[in-house]
Amino acid sequence: MIYRFRIVLDAEEDIFRDLELENSSTFEDLHNTIIQSFGLSGHEMATFYVTDDEWNQGEAIALTDMFDEPSRLMDQTTLNDIFTEEQKTALYIYDFLNMWTFFVTCVEEAESVSGVSYPHLVFSHGNIPDEAPPKQYEQADGKSSDLDHESWEDNGYQDDEWY
Image 1: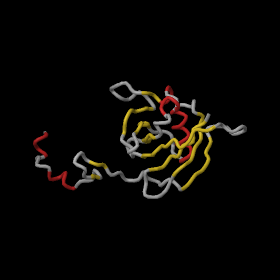
Image 2: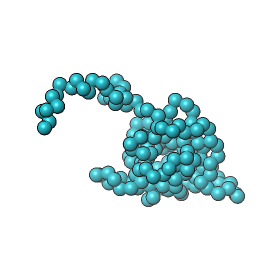
Image 3: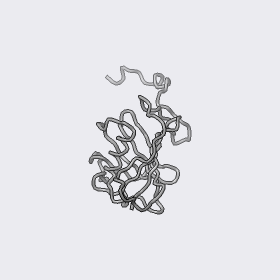
Image 4: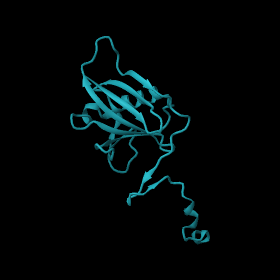
């Protein structure tokens, strides 16, 4: 059996890839397929996050063991460990400095096709920009923030208080 995925870059433009992988493939296989299909270098850290239907971040599946608490690792977690009839979505974060963010949706489970080698790039739409698209972060009070506040300079602290 194979999974068909649509991987969408979180950007203003429509930039996505449709991929097929065997359902017994690991998340490391999916990671490698994503970076190859989008033309990323592959030299940065990355993590998948299992999400709910509203894309709220849940359990992490890390490239390497980098969290204080135990987490799943990409090379030890198969796609069919996570993706089920009920669980269809995940976030993929590549390069924690630039925060390339991708929405991963398992759109279908199907029979593999004889003569096709997997992983398989089925369709490619759009070109990835030179720089990661800017992020908007939502605060607990529902307001958004782009983390570029001019008001940080007027925070009530005197710089010499920290010396």
